[in-house]
Length: 118
Length: 113
Image (cartoon, rainbow over all chains, first blue to last red; front, side, top):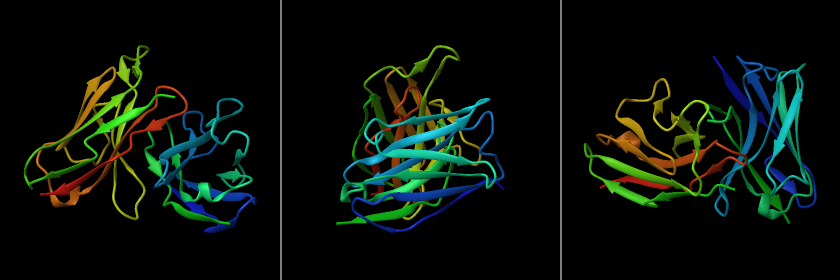
């Protein structure tokens, strides 16, 4: 059964770095047909796509302009997972964060509520 | 960015009746390489992640009841629930995957009348 399992802290202080991990079961982060995404949902922004990583003979990354200076999405082939690093967070980054597969997001992690405290 | 606009913001429908949600994109999302529209529909219930219902504007995801259908092309799309069931109460979102950044509509809240 294919699934995504998220982990990471629910509380982060302003100016610090948010780190979330998404472990993949039943598929591969190195798949040549899948892409691996981070998405967040907040009352102010709704659902917002943050970025993705994927492998097509080499690794590619795409990021939303709104976070491009602060975001890194990193694959870990040894652990079959991918991670979200979001630096210099502010209370505006408070949201539920999801990992998801592909471009029509057919598989989602369970979500992680992240609160940024000032 | 492509702006996705849903209407209405909320909708109340009687059990067994039809529910229709509209989604309009600010730019055509028709992908000429495969003659498909890069439009997906999701259902989200409280405390759960969104669930993919429809992709390529009209293809139903496996396991999705056939009362859910998608239609439209270019910039105008519709999600139809042919006969509303109690378990269909949820938020519904459209999303374009034609071009980065992928963008979502603001959501439509569906309730029972």
